[in-house]
Image 1 (cartoon, rainbow, N blue to C red):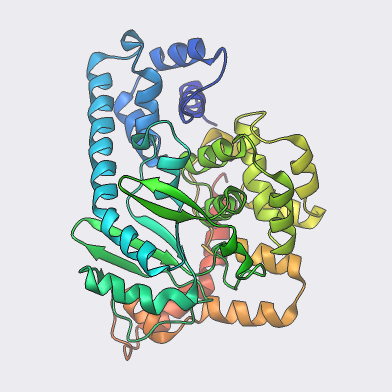
Image 2 (cartoon, rainbow, N blue to C red):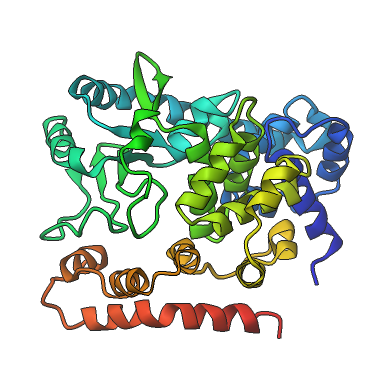
Length: 389
């Protein structure tokens, strides 16, 4: 049972994880903030949730609500993130300009996009690496640009897996980390939409240049899937979903069409459902009803990620990254695709696994890594379902 102070802290975080908590919320924020007894723990938890700058943003105009030392700590954290964000975008300029001139399809996504596109101040949305979705056929040319600009791959696996697999290489130059994805929804198989997705891409101004971005409706679906890939462990991911769902002019018919065509109704529904549970009114009731999956899939979602635990922000072991792909396979009803996908998930290319584990491809220890991949869902389930016993 969670104590009243923990419930109050969870409520404070829910209110402060949005740039504007909403009408009438200011008084509740101040009351909850003044009741926090252990600010060291609270600040640590807020950092884990990715909302430390947002916490400062919502408390900055009411210094009497928290101890002066706490407000100063929050302010320093905000300013550090402000400096970090400015540096990242400054260092990113040359890469973005090179990609634009070459006419390559590489779309800025997740934190690097949202900080500029969704939040009133970029420093409010912390992110460490910068994510791009890349058209697989443009990857060879993009790698040449990375090499010419002095970026180095984080690991050399002696060969790349197929780009329609969940392969996401990291490249680094000094303090700038770039991560590249080749399946636009982060699944373990290609999108059905194909090149049509890229024809509707837009542009986002990044300092002195522009970055390609995919339509907001596609980004919203991707955010829902990404949050589920990480078991909704950071509150800021759900805040992203709520903020984008509230964007004026969002085409909900397109969201529905993407979810149906790509067979991701379950993951998209549940991300939107959780966001709407935490912040009622963030998602219109019509799209939620249209996205509602069947009873078996709906029960599975609620068993794996109980709504009460998500709202209370109770820590729990993360399910494997590929869970949205499994839900999508359930919707696709294709035994052949399911077998191929599960084989790729559980038995990835040996060179790739060796590089990710820091082992030589000939190492017999890789057999243990394969065993870990097979047993992980069972072990995670055991942790989840015995946690309260």
